[in-house]
Length: 203
Image (cartoon, rainbow, N blue to C red; front, top):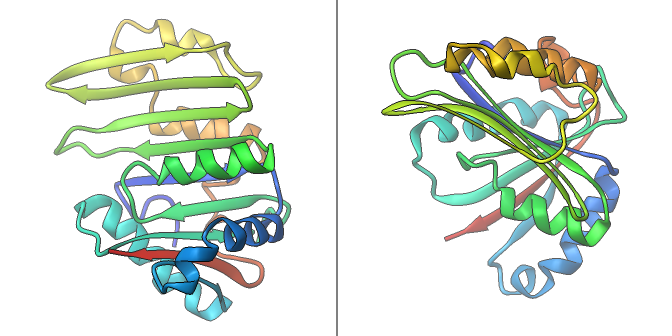
């Protein structure tokens, strides 16, 4: 699997370990786990591909039967904790809960090259009281939006381009990810180095 297998991919990167996230979520969802309203489990590497592809396909279809998230360490950047959700918005409310309680930062990326619908390329950075949001999307017409202080990896010249859809593109976001050590353009980024963590909230 690679970034070109899906027309749009949303994922998060957390500046903390998968074990800390696991420990926190088991406490945070304790009552729901006991009442079988939340399932938290470890996923073997050989099961990961099917689950991650299901999450990414659900992002395209808006058709979900439960809230699901996979946390894993990519095989080519083992120190990074990545989350893929089946929600189109990347389950950013869960991202916020993790970030706030573990006092860690996170990035949320949507990398989109759809040409037949209304694409939306974006990234969000959250760290305590600091938030940075940039997006370029087509909602009838093209819209570009930027809020917060630019981050070290951003090339602000892009945001001044006359053609709005060119201000934040798939390739620009891939370059941003690379500068963060997230090699999203390599197949190994989309596979775990070891067991992953699955969080599932059935309806």
